[in-house]
Amino acid sequence: MKITVENAVARFPEFRFREPLSWIMEHGENWAVIGPNGAGKTLFTELIQGSIALKEGRVRHFGEDGNEISGGIRTLVFKDIYSMSGVQTMYYQQRWNSQDAAGSPLASSLLEGYDEAKKREYTSLFGIEGLLEKRIISLSSGELRKFLITRALMSEPSVVILDNPFIGLDEASRASLGSMLSSLGEKTGMQTILVLSQIRDIPSWTDKIQPVLDKTLLPPVEGKDFFADPSSVSDLFPAYRSDPHMLHSIPDGSRTSAGTSAPGDYEYVLKMNSVNVRYGCRSIVSDVSWEVRKGECWALLGENGSGKSTLLSLVCGDNPQAYANDITLFDRRRGSGESIWDIKKRIGYLSPDMHTYYLEDIPCIKVVASGFFDSIGLSKECTEAQYGTAMQWMRLFHAEHLAERPFVRISYGEQRLILLVRAFVKSPELMILDEPLHGLDAGKKKLATDIIQEYCSDPDVSLIYVTHYKDEIPPCVTEFKVMTRSQRQI
Image (cartoon, rainbow, N blue to C red; front, side):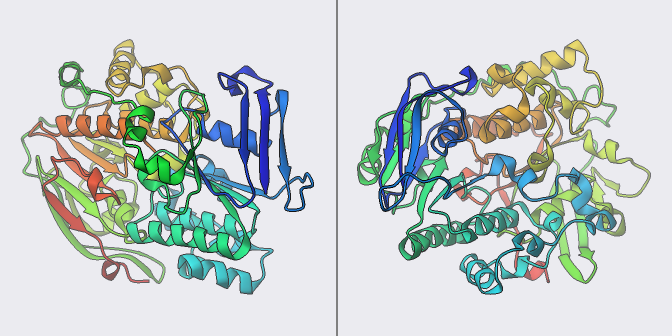
């Protein structure tokens, strides 16, 4: 397919770039669209696929014979992963409740209409054959991403647009996806447009790169020239400086006012002794023991589907199977009379699952403030002081400009940043950050890592940090736990 954009101006102001857009993708080309969070990358791809009404100009698609065509473009935007997975009526903790999860559709049901040969071909390309008979709700974030990417490719589009497809995937899966896209391009002629926030995610087979900055298209660059230019990162991704003084001046919203015991009166944040989690005949976590002392910072590592998120759901009070296991939090055995809210008020938590189900159409300042109550949406009215604290945290993360923006209408990376701020708002004793830098651009990643590092310098703060990128692990992490497939038996 050839795509041309000729002096395009969106009909509605909120969809407009700073100047009329003109752009061409020739037959056979593969592109990467790259830029910082909120730059307009996704908006640009929506325009080139013709889904934005125009006031001026036009967008045209041409087939191999030179005739104008419609259709042939398939888009996968992980910001909308929840609605696309066919489980719109489900809720955040349903994954951990076996009776409720039983109503979730099987992954294979979302591939109806494709013949069995095609299913086998495409699922084997990405190595996800074993996911088809699992329920959608039970898939890990990485597994769900791999499944939805495979489903998008099975339609064999002329052009596929994938928005940050590599985030959430382990190293082997990232390599597999890159190879799969390349081989499908050679085999079927499919062209790829990747929307990325990280330069390191640009595949070597990319022909051209379109930088986007502040709703402006910069001149496109040949792939080989872009990688050879050391200014590519500094020009596109502004550096943000953390302010340790501001961090330490923010009121402690948890340990001084939430009714918890004072910091320092416990030895262990977490103790797990031979923990097992089963759903029916499937063993998700098998015989896991783990101890985290007060003040320790851990990285929890493992491939997609190894049980990391399930293990953390036991800690955060979301998984009822915690009561069937030997688990101690803050030197108190689970099931000894504490409520789920007693647990949560001492923990700051961010995970891909939370992001998937956080679809509240409320201003971002209220999303941050919901961290005081550990709720999806703002379940109680905040005090003026709580809103003030929330805004202080947003300023620290350079996110104050998003305060009154509706959460569902900002970019995926901006949403992730807001949910990261939410995890900090009550100054918790234990931070559990499950892939917190998902979708953040290079500048925001550096800022967030600096803040995490400074926050965890407090000897009364403990950290459990999950990532598939070892270079994202903050320096404060000194302990490591690796989940393996041997601990998860299907």
